[in-house]
Image (cartoon, rainbow, N blue to C red; front, top):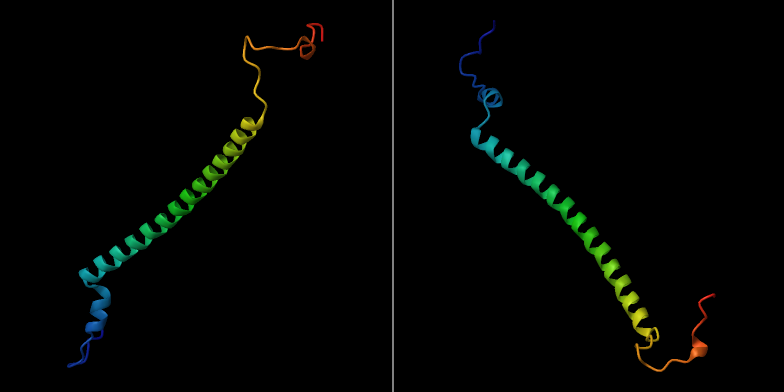
Length: 91
């Protein structure tokens, strides 16, 4: 096995073998934050889709209510009705 010549410092090689624990934690925290940001973006997209779907439903229901309001009201019981407006039971 060859030995290092005197005066040669291969500290950079040792650093590769034993990385700084602080750098490892920083890298891990950065990776964790990137993962959280990615999940947050996905969740935001899903929530936006839900909001769009709900707004479409609200709009449809509002149009339906307006349509129902514009229909003529049915006569109240006891109110005058013409017998010509009623169909015989055999129809």
